[in-house]
Length: 472
Image 1 (cartoon, rainbow, N blue to C red):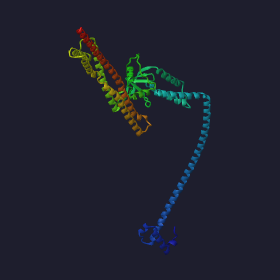
Image 2 (image 1 turned 180 degrees about the vertical axis):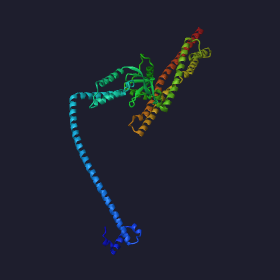
Image 3 (image 1 turned 90 degrees about the horizontal axis):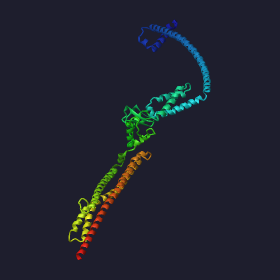
């Protein structure tokens, strides 16, 4: 509070009024009527401020006391927690020591039994690998769950497998061995070639081969489901599967067995069949086959012709005095008879006429021989062309992708080898066929030459005897 003597002096009133005008714009804006009124208002504001300040100090004191109480409570709680932590640490250390002692006692009591459980766990794991890929699991599903439980217990530190669980392992191993020696039919889910699961009858041959509807099955290593081979083996392999699947119970039928559990069957299915090999020859292979078929057709036609002609010539030899126009020998005999009954003919003219008749028959007997020789020579050459094209394809594959993957070069190599094989395949048989045709045609021509020479000799001998009889 400002003392009355100081406030009431005129000079102090003027200074104090000036200060109040500088710091309180709201108060000055009211434009007090006199300095006394202004001073009164200032005194009233100071009193209000002092009252608010005392209220704030009282609130602060109350909060200070409350914070002190909270701090004291927190410190008490911290001490309690620290004491509990120390107690728990002591208890933990005591439990650790006790646990170590108990584990030592357990290991001492187990002795070699721990090693036995380790061997049991290893054996069960190895047998589980067999079960997962075995064809027998399709007939007895769920065996791996039993093995997983046994593996977990055998490797645990606090639980151990029971005698019944160990006997279950022995039972599963014995069942695997027993089923491997049997052929059984049962119903199972099979994923067909289109990827659709179907329930169908399955024939299991030991633990090696699985059949369904005459087709081979394999066990998928990821899903462990029965899956039909996408590419079935061809030829006798797939035929044996059909016969074996359709065989009655108790019957006897042979079957191709894959001891690799599907690997060999898969490789066999990847191999192309006969027509697949032919397709690998490409355009050159098709040309070689066309040439070979043309040559084979000509050889077969000529072989039949020579066979029929040879039979007719033999029949004509049995009736030499009755010439027939359906065979070369008959036509030669008819020419000789016509020439022999003419009075103006001599031996030289008749011989020439017989040679002419034989020569007329030779072209038909030696027909297609030159063509077959050409085909025999052209076959290997066409095969060589295919080989060159195949090597070009191989080198192109090496240039594009390198030589790290042999499968990339297989197409070109197959093209080269198949073309060469096709060329030799048509040349060798047609070479033997041509030799047979040449031999048969020469045999017939030899018969014609022998008969014409014999007939001419008889005719000359008969004329000489007639001339001697006329002179006598």
